[in-house]
Image (cartoon, rainbow, N blue to C red):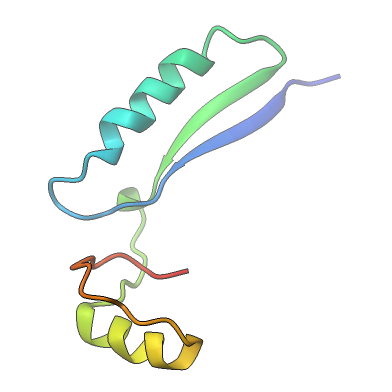
Length: 77
């Protein structure tokens, strides 16, 4: 049976993000475990469309949640 493959997804693409250090730490802690292979997937490495503040406010009206001025430029899920 082949090893399970687990992606550790770094979802923030903002400049100055703190998630990269956390994701690297998770990969480091997971690496010694057996039975699975761990891979960091950094969304900043992919040309994905992003929602700006104006679109997030518009999206908030559609999904029923307000953006609440969090200042994020990442996609809202």
